[in-house]
Image (cartoon, rainbow, N blue to C red):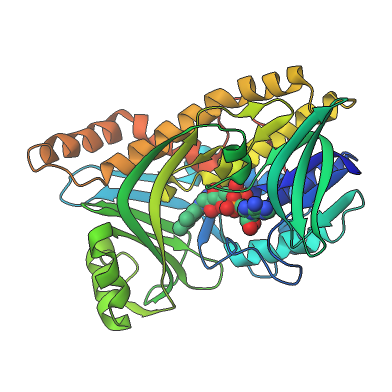
Length: 401
Ligand SMILES: Cc1cc2nc3c(=O)[nH]c(=O)nc-3n(C[C@H](O)[C@H](O)[C@H](O)COP(=O)(O)OP(=O)(O)OC[C@H]3O[C@@H](n4cnc5c(N)ncnc54)[C@H](O)[C@@H]3O)c2cc1C
């Protein structure tokens, strides 16, 4: 039976990053991915990913940033405001001694860069297209699993099984780990937009009645536009022609970037928060979206998932002889807890600012944003989130060397 130190199910953003981090320290890894070779997993689409400064550092050290073929968009200033609200928050990275809070990268470009880097790894064996279909026994310190590929079903085994198979994780389900779910009843539209004023480092985020709207500075002279709408309106918004869509977006975000001139295709994402009630089981650990899928409003999901992956790699580096030892997994869960809790709280707090507020509560909510802006507490939360240096930060996030 094929045996590995670590078997990762899911070669999306987090699973692929983990494979690269483990190869760097010489760990023997198997990576099981449902998408065939020659194609990128669906998740590497047109969405714009804001990489926190900590993420940029780590991906630079892992040799991924150097593989990006397009320019990234630095976020130098962040402006946050709310419809009908006097509160406003503006932050400048220079005030924090930084050139940028982070970088905007198109998911597809990131997928291509990861793919190139995966192709260079010495200790990696890839299984694709292959699907995880079930767990097997635990024997002699190894966890068995079953996968299905072109040759049919077969067993594999590893010291540690990593579930990086996304929001609807089949590994998590096989372990009967329950989830807490919250449907925001919002749909987020994402598109590449051209405006009269070219991006110059400003990111604008505006909270509306039915969801957030944002313009993120991409590296290709366009903005990454994000527009949240009530789920009930999603079909109608999807059906708008380009000019009506741009008018809608302009109303929601205002004239900060000047007139919006053109838009690429829109993709739509229904927003649901899914939190696993446990992060580990015997010789198994859950990472990334399989562990927590959160509202994208704070741009935290991958940044958090990468910190999951790097923390695990760090612990494996120090606990070399058995990557799936109970003590190692216990240390992993304890170390991730504060960052996980704070980031979930931060993202759902921001999402609440965009909920469908009862008219009576609206003034209270406005006062809340205003007060938070004045005391600086919202700034420090936003800056912490934007940069990704929260809690016990993995070593690779600390500097780009
Ligand atoms: C619109 C939008 C914008 C976002 N913006 C940001 C942002 O700005 N910053 C940020 O940090 N995050 C952002 N996110 C979140 C980010 O996309 C996720 O956090 C990230 O994709 C999670 O990565 P993952 O590897 O855990 O899961 P995924 O990327 O979903 O990957 C899961 C992988 O597992 C594979 N798989 C699934 N089941 C099986 C199986 N049974 N067998 C084998 N393989 C399987 C899939 O093919 C896939 O490749 C955004 C999300 C959305 C929707």
